[in-house]
Length: 142
Image (tube, rainbow, N blue to C red):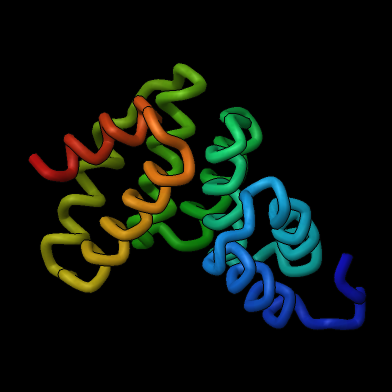
């Protein structure tokens, strides 16, 4: 566990670095739970937490985390994709409106579209056969 004296941003940087270097979602999920407790307004932390919860097949907690991420940063396409995935996996309705918004955002921001494609590829590597993610990927590719 990391020292509680470190700032949430520092914890975030360390945890995201570990994930990017191949740490399993289960190994960093507690770090993001701590970060969201320490800095509840940090939308990126909620986005990451939702993603990790989805990777760990925790759709209900992911739905709560993704909703918070979208509330804090409504224009973030990754937050919206996470919300769509959590909605699909928990049986919630209203996915299409979020997909449409992601398509509009990524149409005007190729860099965000590229980041989103990288994230989807990462998700499919880490959770092969992830039906909900494959469905969202198909919708986003038109």
